[in-house]
Image (cartoon, rainbow, N blue to C red; front, top):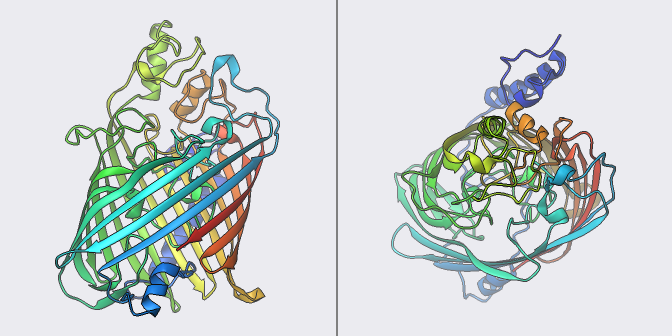
Length: 508
């Protein structure tokens, strides 16, 4: 029995392409069981900051000042932190029936490759009047992506990669924002010192307003065990829901407004931010009454059998000048002269004259998605995570990955059991899908921001990411990583791909 068309949960992308009903049902059951288990076993918890598995906060600068009586780590007026991360990636040669077919330019190259990223960030925070905080974060990146950052959909192997980065160091201001907290009482909780976080005390009932430049992932879709990828997984599939096409420039940052209302164990967030003028490009469009990215998230924190966890429901709605896959196909079929080589507007440089192109049909369109994010500490040294998102899949990727639907889950474990309490081992699995119209567009030789082989034998893209983080010295880590990617760019005619990585990370 085939999986029926009306089944449109997070796994709709695979179910709609004649997946067996039993396979679809198994994924649906997993989602329902995880959600219901968390809801029915949950009890309330008042703590603002749950302890997690990422407790290596041995920042030497603030700690050293505090030891000499020059800084108060419990009630900060200011703080300063920095991080540096170098990631090296090696991709083995892999089998491919074709590459960049008919001049379509977005294939992952089948030969062996090496790539790298190097980043350095400083985080500066300052308290002003009551409840007011200011933050800035200058940042540098140098990079060489595999295959020019082409050929992977929801499973880009290094989350640090940017769409316009070069091997030469580039400096920019990643964050510069004002944050105002208005308290409404409740139970006081301590906030620890950290990057973009000043130590102090907050009430469990409060409203927080933020305005400026930031990453939307500073506030939304956060997860204790899959999100801080400078310490955790390498693959972008674990940074956030892969199908969350959050508005951002080519570096992943944006400008806008965020509101957060906290009421004990509940939190509600909403934001309006700017997207890029052209898809996946650096310049933002500040005409935010016409073009924008809206998102809302509801969070509940809980305790299950003495261990903390959280459940988050996230929805986003973008209004951007973007192309519809079906419109691009129709435009080409109506007039073959409107192909990928003849458009003078913004395009991805395809040389396939027999392919449609999104540049012909860009207009104000709506893109929407809804997702879930769960984290649960199981024991003092083990934490679990799960994410899943369904986006409508009608229009092109505008800011994030090419995925239209996605899921990811896995576990992190600290090294208590083998005498390395600061070390961490992680295992994660992620899978993503694209819509029928997206498949049809790619099968005609079309391209989007990241993928397009010239043809497609559609299968979901899958990745397994395994890492071991070795705590070398205070505030420094060396991480080894292995990724196995099946069906790169959702194409079963290519791959699988093995990628080996190493990361050096320090904080002070």
